[in-house]
Image 1 (cartoon, rainbow, N blue to C red):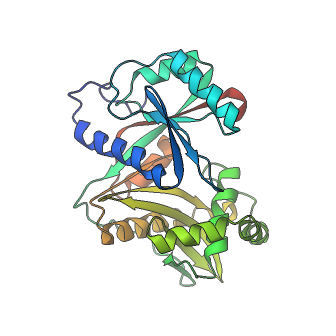
Image 2 (cartoon, rainbow, N blue to C red; image 1 turned 120 degrees about the horizontal axis):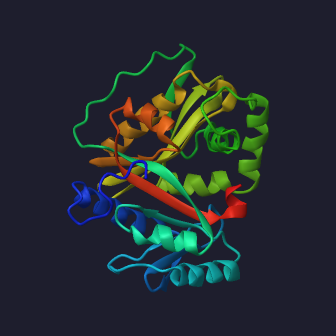
Length: 288
């Protein structure tokens, strides 16, 4: 399996760090989710509007998982009308992959990368003079477009220059206002739960990302560039801004999951190194 260095043995050289990341993964949804105990699995059910959560291995429940454990949670997810999604780290819960696949789910691999404490800031490409990179406040007029960029970026995956540009961005930004996304994220920003960074040109965000600090660790998520603005170093600049902000908030360890190994090589330019594999399982019809 790409990215897996020594299965999930207890003598894995990164075991302590992987355990900290697992603690983070278990803690971060709890401020906005109802938690259901399903034996060896924990199901997080979002309270209110927003991106739906997932099921994860339960903390402190060692032992193998079986397809029946996964099927039980899938039944509950269907009852609730939420995605049948599972997320975990390959090295810490090795038996969940085979259980998920036996239960009929498709498993996706993503390099899990960490920026160690003390890693110096990397040199970044010089951006055009009319582009600035900044942390976006709750009342910043750029926030709607900053939250809209990932929707367009992930709809055209990859690193190639794509079709969606500023016209599509304006429409998507209006949608983020109308559906409450902007209001919800503004509350999280004010509460210190999420930080948003954006590369801005002419009053619109061209690349954005977020990090979520908690107890000295933070995950960078949702980094994306407007497809028409790719290959200008904007995503890398946004990631560097997020790292600096996370460290200013006391995060000694910053980590992320890269989309694939090509993307991982880009993050490596900032000093991130691969420590394992993040796995996501979902039904085949969702994966297509």
